Image 1 (cartoon, rainbow, N blue to C red):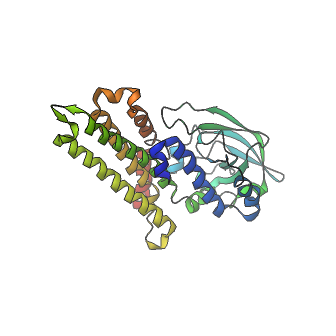
Image 2: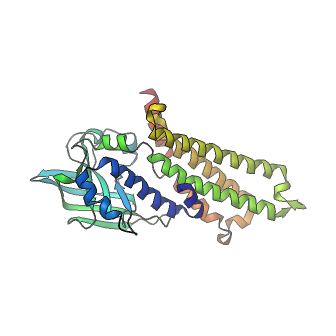
Image 3: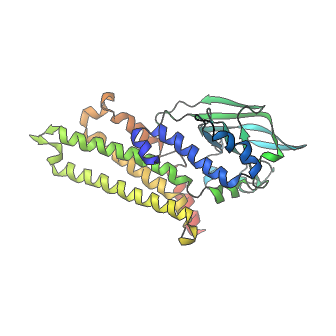
Length: 316
């Protein structure tokens, strides 16, 4: 479903995938009382979306590795909970979500993997506000925004899991998170491929349609191969995330998005080239897909960082 939505528009897919992923995680990670206060309300809201707040201006790839540094967004212990100050940014659905899972440093002088706590956050909580919505190059329908905390009180009952063990929530309940992003960008690759095939059949060059030129035909087949291989990898990762006793490999939580995004970017550049000068013109629609394809090289983890994450799983 996520892939099919992205064939139509990456932004639609990203909004839906983020919400679907988080709803599934919240079903597992929240206790019964927290579910009644959030999911029961969310399920009745036809416009409801969900968000997760991890990335900060100073901590992005640090979280993926993880680098031994604390989060800047910090919660100070007080009677009945925590007073939180700080900011998150680049948060998907950040300005629209009704509920959030946010990760906050609650123990000083400890790395985020040891001193971070996951909290349930309701929209409208005093001390919490939305900052700017980032002006992105692509994937523009999906809003990414800043989350700002100014003496925001989080009660004890909003702790998800255990205090100081937020990283365990990520590790336990997010095994297929990477695959949602992979499926979204795969949809963009499919849309690009279809445009390339359509144009190759219509455009006449050298006295015959482009698709009758061997070089173009071979390139189109390579596009299909990259799409099919990426889809198989994504589906394998998703299935094993749900059946970990059948051979789950932790690199599957990092690499499917890398593979799909690299395939999509290659297909984007090839589709642009096949269209020639027309591909650079907005009315043809390729440029929008190229901008969307670029988003996945950085979202849900920079590709080079995800390679390092997988390497740590393999060799540490």
